[in-house]
Amino acid sequence: MSSYTYPKYPYRISSEQESGRLVRHPVVVIGAGPVGLTAALDFAARGIPTVVLDDNDTVSLGSRAVCYAKRPLEIWDRLGCGERMVERGISWRIGKVFFEDDLRYQFDLLPEPDHKMPAMINLQQYYLEEFMVEECARQPLVDLRWKHKLLSLQQHEDFATLVVETPDGVFSLEAQWVVACDGANSDTRKMVGAEFTGQAFQDRFLIADVVMKAHFPTERWFWFDPPFHRNQSVLLHRQADDVWRIDFQLGWDADPTEEKKPENIIPRVKAMLGPDARFELEWASVYQFACRRIDRFRHGRVIFAGDAAHQVSPFGARGANSGVQDVDNLGWKLKLVLDGLAPETLVDTYHEERALAADDNIANSTRSTDFITPKSAMSRRFRNAVLELAQEHPFARPLVNSGRLSTPTPYLASPLNTPDEDAFAGLMAPGTTCADAPVRVDGKDGWFLGLLGSGFTVVTFGDAPLGEVRSGGIAAPVLRIGMDAVDAKGRLAERYDGTDGTTYLIRPDQHVAARWRSFDADKIRRAITRAIAA
Image (tube, rainbow, N blue to C red; front, top):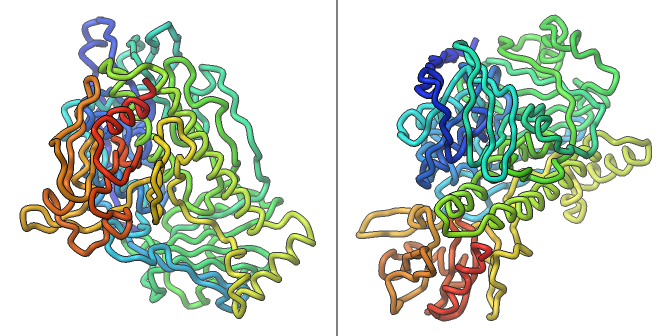
């Protein structure tokens, strides 16, 4: 069996409950899963004291979410956890798709070189959470409270009152903002009466985590209609500690209770791996899923993130990855509003940008689900024809859909962007996540994203007349490529179309806000003003 030992985190009575004082906090986060813990670390990194409430006292049971994409890894790297996750996890970039016995198609998630973070890692969710809990303990601005269950929530004009139950009884606290990261069955969502609409899927899937020594390469393998599991699909992934995730499609009529029994799981695994395969079953779960989202990501003083705001199928690893990017979008906006440097309308742009991303993820997830689980004989014939053709004909390969894997959704139409006034090549349009690249600073190797800091940054290729650009209370330092940092392999110039004088304004969440062919302080100031919705 896996050697993982689940930690037990101590419950402690808070000073406010012990003294009976009613305390108002800047931010209270509900839920200490991957999204809630990321929120705590992000907010603390931006200088926001944050209380996290969780009704449990340990990490998640079982591997659960296991696939984490490059962009969330870059976010966690900024928060002090990314390198540890990559070191512990299993990095991969190649995916293979089989139809029956035959390889029909394969893809490479990171076809271009020179990024710090890998395209994808597989890491059990309990490790992910444990690493973030340990990082939270090192942050004086994070107050992580275990065995604290939210019972009710009442909203006021500029704060909310929360009633919380602990082993020492019930008490109340206040928050200027509440960030609900309490999952798909969010109690917070029910408390504010938010609508949650979309499509629920009837098909059932079995997750079987097995511990075994295997010689499969570190790749994502997906089978359509394999001989060992006819008329269904199967997915195989490797995780840390020689744990292998196997997902079996079961069909609509499967009995979840029966399918989770070891005596029913083990024959399925042996049919796949061979009768002599040696393995141990570590964890199993049967799940159904939905593709849906909340009507508004902000309800008064309550903001929703992660599965509390949106749900997708597991095909494409878009759930937790998208939730982490929710937090990345929200944190800097809350900070500027709390500091009085931006109007509260900036928080409303969180819905505009992340609802767009949720809709994008839902659309991709729904298309994947329809391809994997055809709902009609005609759909199945189309799918099988695509799989037959993909082996020999390149035109068919883009139609193969075993899960379009998570990539950031660019905010190309965001009101925070300043539109281009010059022509640019490449992908770094306003609203796009910044691409990383190797740099050298003071003779030492580094990475571009590590130089951007937690606020606005001006990046210019060549010299600049100013060391920073100020707009109201915001000071954006100027990073000069070629002077403050050397473009070590020319990747920055390549990825940002960085001719001499080219200038970018980068948002605090490492998205492009604006770009020009020359440095103009007045234009930069106007772009900052636009980017904070003032």
